[in-house]
Amino acid sequence: GRSLATQGRINEADALLPKAAKLAPDSVEPHLALGEIHLSTHKNFAQAEAHFIQALRIDGKLAGAHVGLARTYFAQGKHEEAQKQIATGISIAPRDPLPLLTAARIATAKGKIEDAHAYLQRAIDVAPQFSAPYLDKSDLYLLRNDVDNAIKTLRAATQTLKEPAPAWFRLGVAYQAAQRWDESEKAYLETVRLDPKVFGAYNNLAFMMAERKQKLDQALTWIDSAIRIAPNNATLKDTKAWVLRAKGDLASASRFGEQAQKLNPNDAAIAFHLGLIYHEQGKKKEAEQQLSRGLKLNP
Image (tube, rainbow, N blue to C red; front, side, top):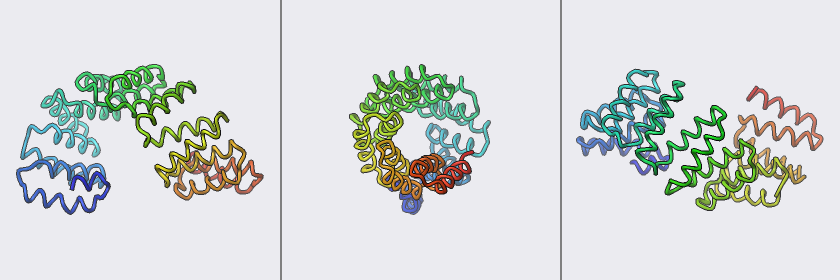
C-alpha cells in the first residue's frame, strides 16, 4: 500500500492500507500512511486526524504521529493545537530533524521568519546530511532578497550533503537571480553531472541562454534532454519555443508554444511568450489575444 502511494496509485493504496490496519491492529504504520494520504492527497483533514490520533493511541511517544497531527491541525487553522503537537514531537525526538523542519514551516506560514530560521539551524545542527533544512533556509533568504546568504547556505549544503544535486540546483537558481550567469551555468551543469534526471537544470540552462542569446545550439540540446525526461511538461515546451525564437525559427517556436499552452492553458508566462512570438511573426490579432489572455491569468 505504501509503495503504491509513493507511485501515485492512491486508489489502490486506499484499498490495501485499511486491510493492513485490520490485520495488524497494534501496528502504527498503516495509520501513519493513511494519515499522510488523507492529509496530503485527499485533503480530508478529519480522516487524517483520526488516523494520526489512532497511531498515538497505539504509541503515544511516536514523534512522526505528533508531527502529522500538527500538520493536520495547522491545515485546519488550529494553530495552537498544531504548536502543542509539534512541541511534543520535538521533545520526544530532539535529534530528529523532521519535527524541527515542520516547526520551521509552520513558523514560516505564520510569518515568524526568525523562529523559522532558528528551527532550521537546529535541524541542520542535528542532521547535517539532511538536505531539506538547507533548501528551506535558502528559500527564506530569497524571500527577503538576501541572495548572498542564500548562496552561502547552499554552498555549505553542496559541501556537506552526500547527495548534493538538489543544493546545486537551488544554487544555480540563486546565482541566476543575482545575474551571476557563469556561476549559475556551472551550478546547473554540476547538478546534471550528479543527477542527469534533474530536467529543471537543463530547462533553466536553456532558458538562460535564450534570454541572453548565447550558446543557442547548446541550449537546444539541453532543452531536448529535458523533454526526453519529461515529454509532457508544459514549461519545457515553452522553453523550447523560447530557444527557437532566439534562434530565429519563429514557425517552430510558435508550434512548441502552442503545444505548451495545450498542456497548461492557465499559465500566464506561456501566453506572454506565445504572444511575443506571434507578434514577431506579424500575427497581430493572435498576439493581442495571447497577451490579453496572459493579463487575465496574471494581472
